[in-house]
Each structure stands twice: as C-alpha cells, then as structure tokens.
Amino acid sequence: MPKSVVNQRVMDLLSMVGLNSYERKLFVTLLSKGSSNAGQLAELSGVPRSRTYDVLESLADKGFVVVQNSKPIKYVAVPPREALERAKNKHKEDYETATDRIERAKKSDSLKELEELFKTGVETVSSSDLTGSLKGRHAMHQQLESMFKKASSHVYILTSEKGFEEIAANHGNLLKNASKRGVRVRIAAPITSAGAQTAQAIRSYAEVRNTKGRKNLEGRFAIADGKEALVALTHDEKTHPTQDTHIWSQSENLAGQLLQPMFEAIWKDAEAVN
Image (cartoon, rainbow, N blue to C red; front, top):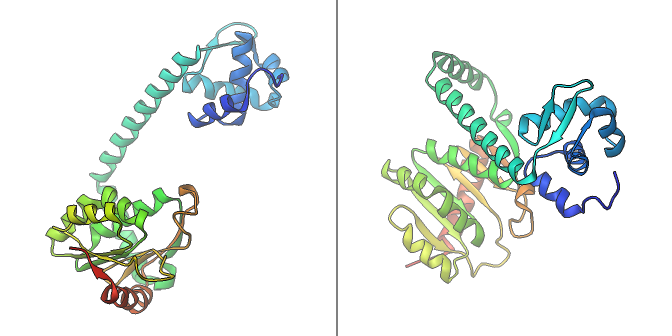
C-alpha cells in the first residue's frame, strides 16, 4: 500500500474507533480500491494472506465492509461516515446485550453458588494472597467503588489535588451513601481555591483537611475499615491515566497497622477546611 494513501493521523483515528493494525490497513486499501477480493487486498495492504479473510470478516461485523456473494468473494468498503455510524450502533447494541446478560446473571441462582465458592476460598487463603496490582486509572476507580460500597466503619483517603477532584466527581454519591450508613469519611489532600469549593460541596458527608503545607507528601492511598487498602505506586500528574499503577490488598496488617496510623498522623497535622 503506498505511503501516500493515508497519513498517520488517519490511521490513529481508525485506531481510536477500535480498528487494529491489520483492520486499518485493509480498510484504507479497500477505500482506495472501492471493491476487491482478499488476494488483491493482501498484496496491496501488506497484511498476511492467511489473516486477510478473518480480518475482513471482522471489518464486516463492525460495519466497515460489505461482503459480496460472488466468485471469488469480493469486499466493498462502506463510506467512512456511514461506517462510523454503523460502528457506533454496533457498540450500542453490544453494550445493551452485554448489560442485559450481566443483569440476568446477577439475578440467577448460579451467582449464589459462585459467591459461596468465593466465600469458601477466601476463608482458606492468607491475607498475602488477597493482594494484587491494578493498572490504569479506570481500574483504580472501579476498585475504589467496590471498597466504598462495602465500607461499614470508616473510609480514609490521602490523595493529590487532582485526585481529590476526581474522587469527588466519580464517587461523591457512593461516599454520601456510605456516610448515611454511618461510615466516617475523611479525605486529606492539597486544597486549592477550586478544591475549597469542592470541599464545601461535599462537607455534608466527608470531612476534608488540607495537606498543602506539608513538604514531600505526594502519596495516594485509600483505606476501608482498616481491613482493605489501595496504594498508588505512580504520580498521577506525571503518569498517563492508562499507566497509573496501584497495589490493592485485604491485609489488615497493611491497612490497619501501617497505613491507618500514618493517615491519622497526617490528619492530625493537616489544616481543617472551613
């Protein structure tokens, strides 16, 4: 495929909407040809012939290609704007189907069996086995959501200026519900003027203290009930969200004996936000 056909920005756009490397190459080649068979497309695109058929099937499933029932089979490119609309509708359909299946699974008796199996397994493992790493800001927020939902006594959070805003935006309702259950919610973070407004907005369910004056305090962690902890290993201002890495643990030694006293010492020295 001639390099002049498309620039990298176009290939990045196709990647952004979910096409892998082979799919991108075949789609732009087919766009330039209008219609073609698998052999010609493999030769022009540089995609291995052995992979061409299944990649074209994938493109057809995603709405970027139409298959013609001819001999040999030919493929026709869908106009780009229409292809994106088809892809959007396909994603919506897949999302609705998956959501429906998950909701039905949550209501099934089989889930109860899985929960009993998990409960039995947890009782036989040590706390060191209930530890793992999480990569990506999205995974971090999912784990925080789980921790906040289960909390029954207290939630202590040490975070950054950016992290404070993200927690308020993403987990405000969960923390509010936790507070209604009697959970004490405390957040220590560097508070700017914008952060002060956020602190005021969440003061009905979370106590907030300002750590801005403390030197060399840039850590992030969250503790639930002194039994579960999530600890950041990266700096959220210096790390891309997809590379943000955390350690999660249900070790009471880590959460209750190490991190909780550390948080309480930081909390004691931090300034109350009025």
